[in-house]
Length: 198
Length: 218
Image 1 (cartoon, one colour):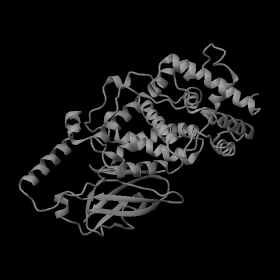
Image 2 (tube, rainbow over the protein chains, first blue to last red):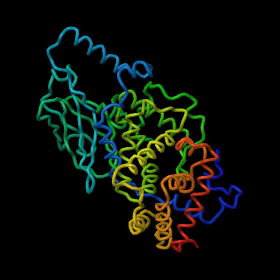
Image 3 (tube, helix red, strand yellow):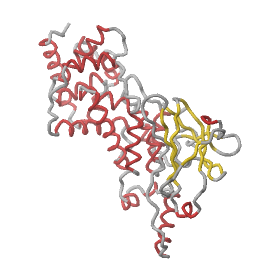
Image 4 (cartoon, one colour):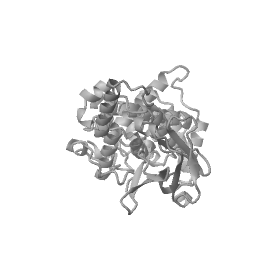
């Protein structure tokens, strides 16, 4: 490893100490303005892609210790459902994406709550709201909608850059966003989801 | 505290000690701490366990480096933005193949470089550098110093770099602009050390020649 070079310390050769190399280092240290919404666009494509593209078999054979309990339970349920010949179609694979902000002004943040498991779809809620710092915890209600009935509830909320805590309220029951980017204890034994808008 | 605070208590498997045995990663101006690497490893495991949103942690940590590298290779922000997105998408899809004995930054740089290669090979995307006016604008807007002379000098350097053949441009950007070590460059480009060193010397000579032709060498 040539950390002396990486750190910019003189390496002892005339070449590395040359003015040209020094200038290139200066160029390298000059900040590159990353587009403000680059992260959002990357994540939008990632969320659209779904899960990392390892095959099912590869997941089992390649790194079996990474099969999470939730995944294992899900596989068992799917298997049972198949065996008993349930008439309901498999729930669509939906990424529980949380936000997608548009560039410019207050960011239009799209909240998504996916309730697509068979159990969740059997008990379709009447009202899904979002409550958080930004609307005085529901004082100004923000309703999520699922117009096509596929179990994907969405709402767009204009938010200025900052960090916000929020929860979903499903028929009066507080539900933590399972796909939040971070969580924080609410002091009452539950966790609030945390959203950072850049 | 990182954006994933509160998740560190989850009983997820993290990469083994080998993942932390190496020296801090690549960006000279933004060296990652051990905590950063732990957060990174946890984020990777969360993603592989199905928590796709945790990939955001990796994007935040590396988008600046990847975008900066691609900006300097492409010479324009439009292509750099598109290729940065593609590089991260490829990384996400191939995350199960990531070897934690290497730094993630090295791995994503390699993906970014391969993405750039594909881009350069594609039709209508010859290795003709972006014109200097674009680069001048790029440097003027991206240079942290408000000093116009410095911005102009950076634009001149960027223009000269962009005029180099691809393989010399890459090595020069990685070695002298990004400040990577030869070991790290070897992991990205996968060439013997001697070849890398010879290529760096040639790239510098070619750059010097470019600047002299343009009257830019002081």
